[in-house]
Image (cartoon, rainbow, N blue to C red):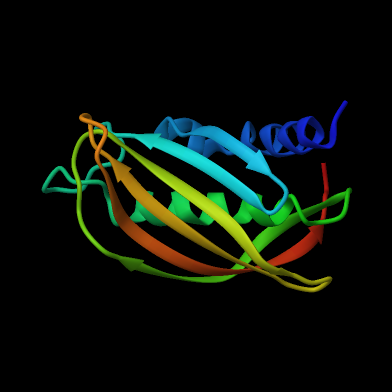
Length: 144
């Protein structure tokens, strides 16, 4: 098994245990060392009262993408948990899907700093920046 496949399997196994992501219909798109991309299709499960993507869904997607980017840099036997994140919402969108790409900025033994960019992909294929996030993660022992 190549390192790329091992990373994919490690992240995919953890992603499959994400009840919220499963409920919302998110899917894992790409996993590389220090990077993770997750997609979230538009549905009535992710909207706010004006039928745009809900900020909570956008924030959760960014958190997951950044977190799994961080997990690719954490030692075997460890998971990561968010300590904090700050997100800026740039624009509201309906339809299509969101794509969040998380990237590791710095991976230390005690904290991992990541960023995530969330783009909206319209049904016509146009890409627009929806949100940007900075996150701090802490490696924690895997308990299951």
